[in-house]
Image (spheres, rainbow, N blue to C red):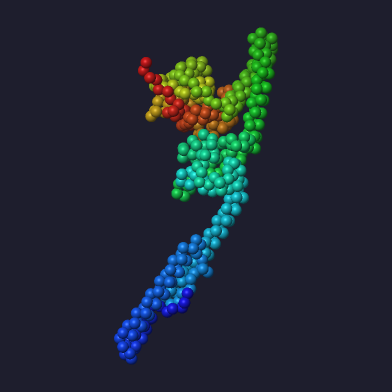
Length: 436
Ligand code: ADP
């Protein structure tokens, strides 16, 4: 582009020259000169504008491809060149930071998938590609539920409660067990973190199988030994007082071991994910009437026991599991309440939720122990639990049964005053009776 001067100075200069021509020649020549000069000035500005427009239309405009210009246009192009250099520097810095972030995320042992507001894949690291059998370049923009097809994952995504991870078996690789956790961030975006827990689950399965097998193997010899002790005591085969006392003790301990083994087997069955909850129509009122009778015989008249059936709502679930869980709560209430104490069993419906409550006026539990009560073999007072014939597994069984029925356990207790254990069942498990 030619270095044509521009701006107000040029116009003033041209006017002065045109004035000079008028003075030494005539007005027609002066006007002709002035018009041609102004026309050339306009053509110059139009060419510069067109050059700027062409430059702006380049897909990646850079400072090196900027057109030349002089005067005011030179200033404009110089400023644009500076702006482009700054822009390219910040672009490089952002790219570098992004690349570093991408390398760090790629090196993570966990799979990471970035999801947009509509749960479509924005980006993922190589581990996630491996876990889900996807290709980040090919599958970017696809809904995540198209690629992670397990129905539990779609449910997990819809709940918007991601405090607990979801364990899934990856169908594309049958042997892969993944722990998936969604982490919301930014403007309704989400991070999907996947961990391969196949080995961990393998060890856990081995532990479960081992406990189940050992318990199963122990059950038969224990039943035989228990049977012999019973026969020996009944037939009066042992004559000495010492021998009789030993026989009673041995029979008691065998019974305790049998209960322990049975509880371990129950827990194994409840933990087995293949063992789905049976969806039966459970008449809770009938179950509680039976448990009330059993509680009376366990207490042998030592406690005031009452049963309040405020609703006839039935539950959708496994009758055996529910009977076992409720039975454990009732037996605990009797075992941990001194003679003369009170035990109240009740079945209510509150705001659509059904609740089974066992209230006792027993020894109560210190607040610090409550969160740990449902752990296996956790006892507030070991000697007392053993003395009452406890196995230390009762509340662990209760927790598993309630989890399997999407119910929750609430424990309110005060030492010396008593305890209240409530099992809350969600509305979807309640079957409200229709008038016939
Ligand atoms: P255990 O067989 O020892 O009773 P559980 O799992 O049933 O085992 O209960 C765990 C512990 O919780 C018990 O050892 C006892 O300390 C406490 N506990 C359970 N129920 C009650 C209750 N109703 N009152 C007081 N303490 C209780």
